[in-house]
Length: 308
Figure 1 (cartoon, one colour):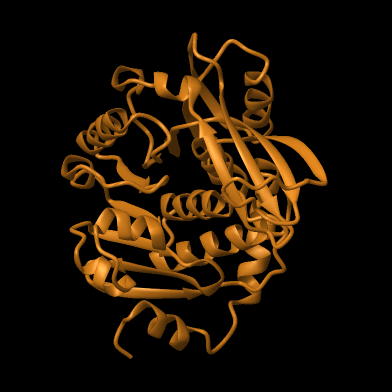
Figure 2 (cartoon, rainbow, N blue to C red; figure 1 turned 60 degrees about the horizontal axis):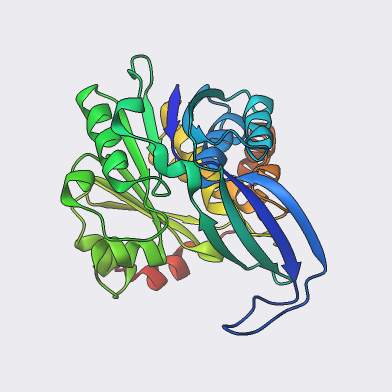
């Protein structure tokens, strides 16, 4: 079983020809709202894409924005542990360009209400999955509490920021993209150089259309990306994190978990929205069964700066 603690936001999404530059106004051509937030996205990915029993600790306001978030969690069979706040439910404002890139601004609201004392006992859970859209002190306290209870801690260090040593010391699996890796490592070099600066047993780095890599006890594992035609990259990383954590909780090897995470992230890119884009476990299994493209590992290894 997996316990997720983190954010939940209602996403306000505008599709436009391109993402506006500073001072630019762009006329969009579609608007929708979707349940989102990194924590809630990843909880649903654990349950739906990963097929794992999942609980989630989240904070919501007493407003109408909370209702679709609760409904989405219920639809995915995620067991909620809700802290009700007098702050408004978190929101995110997202522009998605016609080439599937996005720019996101988050108003955390109730997400900032999560405190250390809100985490329940984790007996029976194998993994605690965390992100950085809730207070950093709270995330650190949750990771330390899980470590003390013998629960594996998976941290998706997003949004990018420098992390305190106390938090990194309590993390078993760190998941980052290239920008987040540079922030955590405080280094602008290659993936290999940044990894060498991190004292975390297992670090997973997502590399978009290239694929992903991981270092576990000094050993490197590479996973090429599954080719898809992207529509919206929102929640691709969250889908990856949820499916990866679910696979690890089910006893799969790290290499297998990277496959499941990569497949879930790729499929999420083919659909609009955050939680609405997260694939089912059957869809993930079918894509994994088809295999990643042959011959891509050498290019991925070279890009990361690992020796051939």
